Image (tube, rainbow, N blue to C red; front, side, top):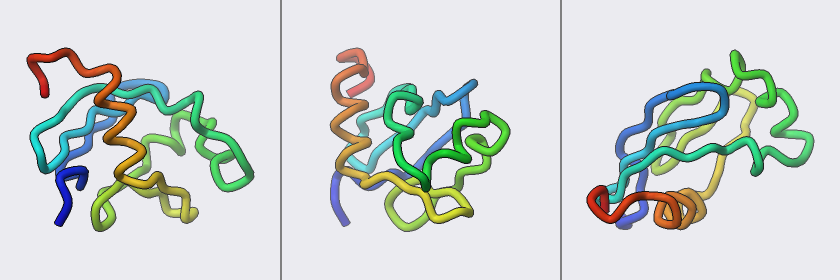
Amino acid sequence: MFDYEVVEARYVRDHVVWLRFRDGLAGELDLLPHLRGPVFEPLMDPVVFRGFRLDFDTIAWPNGADFAPEFLHELVGRVAPPLER
C-alpha cells in the first residue's frame, strides 16, 4: 500500500470530488480541466461523472476511465489547506 492510495471519495458537485488518501491528505478537487481525451468525453456530463467508484487505489468510472492515484494526490496536495494535510 502507498500513502497516495485513495481510501474515501465523495461527489461534491459538477466535476468536483472530495478525496481522502491513506496518508491523511484530504480535500476537494475539480477534475474538469483534466478530462481530456476520448475515454474522458462521457464524463463531461456531470450525471455520468458522478458515477465513479473506488477501484483498488483510485477512483474509476464504468467506461474504464480513471486517474493515477499519485496524480490525484499531487493535485489535492496543491489545493488542500494545511489543516487538512
